[in-house]
Length: 71
Image (cartoon, rainbow, N blue to C red; front, side, top):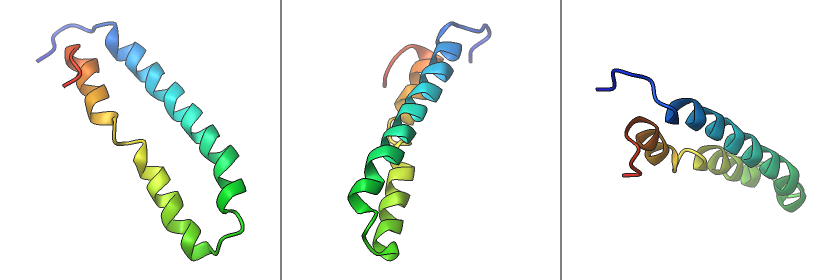
């Protein structure tokens, strides 16, 4: 259990916010051009997957913030 704050937590939070911002901008910029004319029932699962996909590296990232190790 962590007793003292460390530098990885604020850096990790800023990195997470920056990464999520960049990811969102890239998705908002390029995906509508590709799938914008597709039927809504096809677009919906694609946007759902893209909305969840950013969570995949989150576990390792949070472990790094707490322990300094990636796994």
